Length: 363
Ligand SMILES: [Zn+2]
Ligand SMILES: [Zn+2]
Image 1: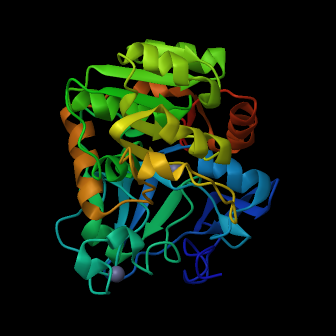
Image 2: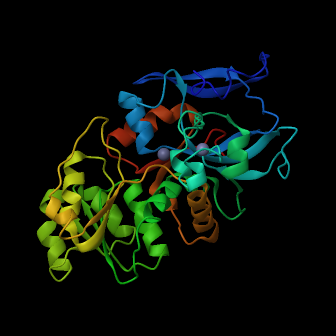
């Protein structure tokens, strides 16, 4: 319960005026917009008035079938930006009304993993994740304020600033590989994460980015987002076309963005000898995969399956958005009011999006 009701359960007794609207995911498929006690800032934390929250694939999966790391009932939504509504007494450098963008987790800074720069694996990260962006207000603990919160530049729209969290995940994955400007990169999948990889690789100067997608609408979006080529096919059937585009070598870098077992298995078949593969999408818990050992050994294909992000990745994502090196507004198909979150989730389920913005105050 500590995870789920972080944004209100420990607030003082609410008065009638001291309430806010927040979506509560009671169980998979059952979402309720409830009046909740206004969250109160911890001494070292803040409360944020949400100005934009984005839907993501994880939200849809959690809504439809639950999530192994989240306990229900829970507050819902984790990609957001907003304005500071309350500042804890110990917080310095933030004032009510400041526009901010933040990632929803923070590492402890002192455990075995944190001391080895693997803060994404810190045991604090997932259990203390902040949920509740699909609400009027969200409470951020001191750890998040100290490590993963930034002032939002005024020229950056709130809804684009809310892309910092998924972009940080993408930056985390890319921190393990060494793409060159003249590489051919293959991205598998057609959702927001694929498009964020496309934008992040473009920001690194990569010229040749091929998207493999099954859905024609997604393929079209990838094309419009600047893909060099689009292969409209299942990843398992894309090898010949990838070879034809790479003088028979295969891609220098392959990024799997679907979380499907078959796609994980297909990904290294699209890489060149000595190529790199990022298996980005988490599969259903308990899944197993099979790889050809020759590809990993004699062909020395390197594979990494990165999880979440570190504060360095969040900083990089912030810099890319703040500088305009990554412009992701076109990922957001439409804006909905808070009460219309179910409409956005239905549209996502029907293949819309790839993202929707929830704007609580309709501004
Ligand atoms: Zn997300
Ligand atoms: Zn730690």
